[in-house]
Image (cartoon, rainbow, N blue to C red; front, side, top):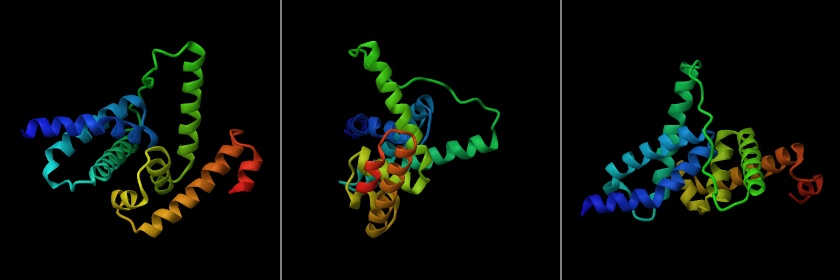
Length: 175
C-alpha cells in the first residue's frame, strides 16, 4: 500500500530531517515545522527517490526549506523567533539535562560560525554519518569538493572551538 510506504518513510527520516534543520541554524519549533514539511514533500515524491538516496533527498528538501525560512526572516525581521526548547531526556537528572543543554548550545554556536557550505558538509558527515558519496549527491557537488569542504570545516570547527575554550590549543596542532 502506498500510504504504508509513505508512513514508513516519514517515520524513518523525520528525526534526521529535524536534526539537520537544527544544525543548519533553526530554532527547535522551526525545525519541527521544516521536518514536517520535508516529510510531506518527500512522501509526495517518493516514487522519484532513488533507493539508497533517501537521506540525500531528505537533506536537499530540508536545506531548501531552511533557506526559505531564513529568506522569509530577512524580508520580515519583525517576526520574533520562538524560544522553544530541544526535546528533553526525561530519564536524566537535572545536572545531566543542564549539561546536555549547554553542550547543544555550544555545538550550535560553533556550527553557526561555519559558512553554510562548510556547515552542511560537516553536519552530514560528522554528525549524521552520511558517506562522502551521499553528501556529494545531497549537495550536488563533486566528491573531491566534499573532501575539501570537510577538511576546511574540520579546521574551522577546531579553530572556533579553541577560541571558545572547548578545545585546547593542542587540538589545533594535531590538525
